Length: 413
Image (cartoon, rainbow, N blue to C red; front, top):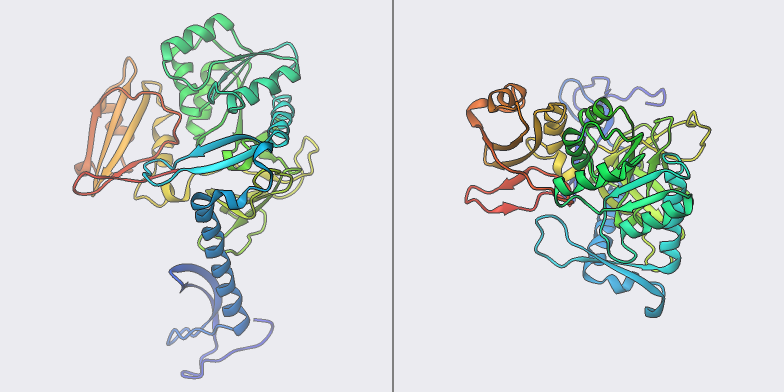
């Protein structure tokens, strides 16, 4: 407290620093302030009060800009209609509202291809066969942009798109024999369980939360190096990717300025602290975005990567803030269940205090073993376990939340 001993005006006791949670405009935040140990009276300086209130107000303004992006996307477009090369419509999982529309110029798409080429150069080599089990096959879509980046790298790409049928994808991969595969985490895990002899040299996982249990399963069965990529359509698809040092993901620093902010406020956090990932586009032509709040939980890493990269790096992303706020998240379940080879996949739903797990079991799997692996995660008297088929999906995974009436509530992006 700057060498000053503050005393309580009511009790005369010396104030001691204590972390206190404050509320303002339906937002909450914590801060270490002087507190009376006897009566609990709190001393808040004018600078602190005004500063934190300003942060909350700025956070609400950021949220309003995100809402405006949905309701009035044309206000964000900075090029002529003829210069727009691609328009992408996104709807949040479980949402029935209007879709978010994002606009890209030819230059925007070209820079994404260049990032894919440089990022994949960390993972694949010229002459390698690379299978892309991700994205759509539409012109200028994720899959096609990645395919073009791979061609420029000198690899032989096979664009399969996100898995729709596991048997067909396994057949295509076993015929192609790729050195590298790009895909969604849960889908790649199931492919390695179905075809353990495939054994590519490297794997790039993207599009959803990457559980450590899943990573170690793929590494163990395929004996390959696993790399993580974080990105979203709003950022221009490419955002950050791991290098062989595996010391965080290298951020696309020439295109994005990244901040980590305290959830619910606008307070920027230093490297090493966890919070919401926020980015500003630096070179976007068609639809530049300022301080876009991703809703994802992560942190920046301090220092320089051992590979020599001195730019900003992002640690593994720990998922959606909305999902983490649930009584149990899909991330907790993934860590507990995806290291079990007798489980192909699962789906989870929560209705009141009843958690239902639908398990798509591999040979040798049983509900008894599933119950054992769920011990300590959820009360057994409020846990329903059943078997069933879980179809492949490119949507982000989430625990489905149902109301007592059985209505599904929106749960994740």
